[in-house]
Amino acid sequence: MNLNSDNKIIGGMFGLPETVEPKVATEPHQWKFIDDSNLLLANGRSGIMVLIDRLAPASVWMPSYLCPTMIEAVDQKKTNLRFYEVDYNLHILSTDWVDQIQTGDLVALIDYFGLPLSSKVAGLVKGHGGYILEDACQAFLSEHVGQYSDFVLFSPRKTIGVPDGGILVSCCNVKFDNIKLETAPLVWWLKMLEATINRREFDQYGGDRRWYRLFQETDAATPIGYFAMSDLSRKLLLNGFEYKKICRRRIENYSILAHNLEDIAMFPILPEGTIPLGFPIRHPRRDQIRINLFQEQIYPPVHWLIDGVMPMEFSESYRLAGQVMTLPCDQRYGSEDMHRMVSSVLKTLNNERGNLQ
Image (cartoon, rainbow, N blue to C red):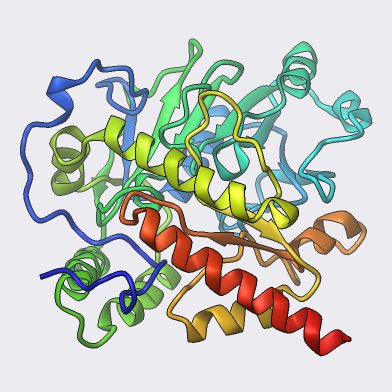
């Protein structure tokens, strides 16, 4: 008995699938995360730490607009952490910083919201002897992933209902054969599993939101280290999801939002081969709009809050961080849910305009 579109919440973590049946086997194995040579870790940030250990770069370069957890994976006592500027439109306008790259440096480029990274910047970095780490945590199913990078990092639980998982892929001659992993801390993992089960039950039957409290606790306590992905998540990745169906639904939902909210969309047109994380919008009064949406049971996340993390000199990144939020358009929802969300957003915007007159 699923909750209907009018009273179910939109947004939040994914629930564990109800059943696990062989599904991927009926599809071509085009998904880059399904390969025995990949390093299957407990989470994405551990992938950054392991890669830095493996390469021992003099410097790690990261964009001025990022998820702060990426920084947690860098031991700044051993490695020099440097930033390059990303502007309000997520463009890398200046490449002067590339001249400072030393051979063997690691440069992280992010597939923001599932979109492709800059092939121009990737080429310049490689020309200076640097390695490219493509952060595809928001581009789990996008077709363009891996074209210009040396390494790819995936975080499947941002896209599907697995309790844990980070996947590090090598696209170059650096391999991970000799890396030994241990089991992730059991208390942490069991709470993650409980959260995904609770979310599944909540979506089916309603009730309290214990899953949200558990998610907050486990996310804050995420271990960073040589920790392996659980067997459950491995099996789910292989057999638990119909990826082509997920791709179609995300694109269809994105199209509905883009058609109705074009004026505030960051990317009104979705590039070919891009499977979106969500539908990012920008507005100067983002925080008030978001609060109003919360009251309508719609929970758009902010990607990302960088206050106190990024140097203030990156003013364009701060401007974006203060105005952007991501409307959910994932496979859990259909056209009715998208139109409900459009109606709520437009109502909120109209109220905001009325209050300003």
